[in-house]
Image 1: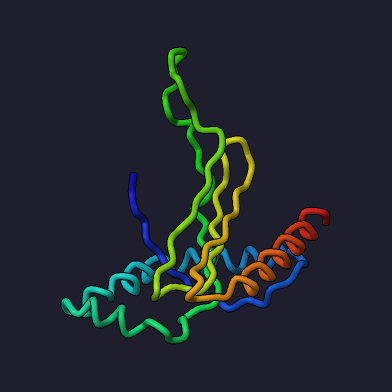
Image 2: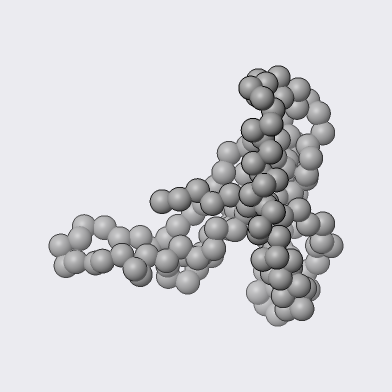
Length: 151
């Protein structure tokens, strides 16, 4: 198991129209920013032990981002040795993350399943976003995602 941290800020226009050109452009931008992403995340070490003050100072203030999408990719267990005596195997994976006061108010967490499915979870804190807002976001996201699938 490993913990690979990266960060890529992006402010695209949300639309129900899927564009391979936009997806390709975003993929290229994310890949080219990999080298500096760890450095940006790693800047927390320069707080010099003032972590409690740093985090408490964020309470009640506007979040740095409204929406964060984390995609851990397809979880593939095909490289794991299977035996006839094994008692369990992974059929479905779901990924979620906790609310972090320095993070976005709403988080979309994406993970591909070994069977080819896709799991998307939404996490948030009531301190960061009101329930009605999040429910409206989820409803609209589901509608837009369904529109993309139908096209």
